[in-house]
Length: 266
Image (cartoon, rainbow, N blue to C red; front, side):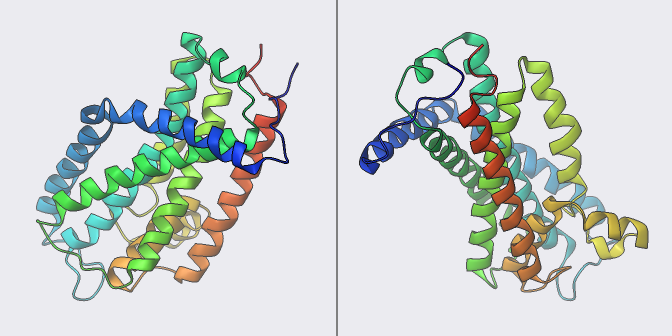
């Protein structure tokens, strides 16, 4: 059999029950080692802030009346949200595949939708937990304000869901840890670092400004930053459109792979 077993479509409560159980298991998985999964990323973000903020505070001017350290904080928060949402789903799947306990999920009557909802929802929880931790610690250095909290929340949720879905694709594709590390180090990390976390794209040469606009990570970070300052490099509506469309494409691809049983049954 090459496909995941579908659940009874006439019992939506069954889907929710199955998804909620898997969601609880995934949240418990990262929460049991929260010192590593939440504490370590918060410490990393604080180190970034201390180093870049101290060195560049008096040398970089981004927006009017916004200091560089304050500008940096939303970027670090969103970077932490995205990277940890991706890490949650990707690490969970690759560990299950390598240790062999994935079979215990495959024998359950969970539908592809239940897998998708549970894994992505857990990745959103971890991403937001790390993001809130980073914000709580870094806000003491330079309170950035919160001009449009709804915008910030929308981009945080969409960005985490997008990266959680991408993490599922990476986890399905990878067969060993070094493949997963390559996916993260050569795709996720560069696209995040080149998305305007540490700078405004308006400070770049024309060619690199144009190149940045092909990076969906840029729109996630720029839209999130708009929620703090009310200003951004591009319109938040454009950012929302790009991020929402990117999430829809990645989610559909993820569901297609789950339904086909891609690298799940071998």
